Length: 162
Length: 281
Image (cartoon, each protein chain N blue to C red):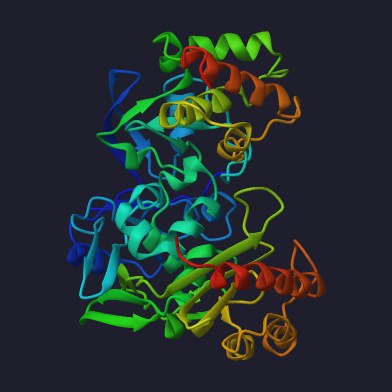
């Protein structure tokens, strides 16, 4: 009925995965330690920094504030899967072109968060971009270049229309 | 940090969740987990059992009945943000939602969890108090309804008993006369407020009636500023702001001193009073 460890089955980046995990293990630790998907990063571990951002059932979540056991039956996507699928190639290129990263620790979370914004809103202004990215810390860039990159991709995806 | 070990169980019904709560003395319900898991990771609490209620059917609906809007406990913040019913019938909650944490957290955090956790700096408990809302609770002896003003007891403390499950909140549906206002000060967008104010009133000629001012982040629970409310009903904004000296006595905390919070509370009332006096579009 209740257990310290539980068997879970889920899909990760489209692949079926079945593992037994400790109940207290966070989703991001499970992805990194059990599945060697180390693109999602562990920063603050209490929901502030956004470095652990992954997608569960199509929406972004904090990987540190989601338990792996609670993802039984879920569809999990990480930066590895979303990158390999080509879904954010333009965002990645814009981040590189505009120096929207230096150390890169925050970048996977930034990309997934920016992608969700661009899916919801085709023409976000700079203020809305800043608001949407407010839960993702970057300690290198000062954010200006990140906002520039996201704005440029929104513009390009919209066929150059604002 | 990593949380201390705990056991995990998935409840498939309300009855099962209530039964499971009795099996361990240190059991906690897991809804969105966006506050709970952060406190576990920081080892501020160490429950022995987490009971996942996300699989219980029927707790994630939003419905208007008998002049009231009912929001199920498992409605996520993001779901509430998109809800046309909340926009129309609970405009104060609609106004507050974008200020709650960040998109990734709103995708997972629940309305019921926010109320049950009762963080004194959280937006939704204050909204519920400002609207004169109520809370549905189911426990071993059955279902009961608690008024918002009776629900919040102290710092992170509510009337919920160890085997109680919060199942829904209910607020009076807005009418053509309803006026609402909301403002908060945060260090960073989405942070907990240094001070915040959720307010409701009824338009009455050129003035306001039944003003309810619920402050958050200025005490152990969301707090009504009742003397300011009475003065505001007469349309005197400056006098209402002055009355806050008697209504509020915020303690210092990690974000600001009590004196700064008092000052911010006054600035907030000026802004929110203007929102209340605007005509509804």
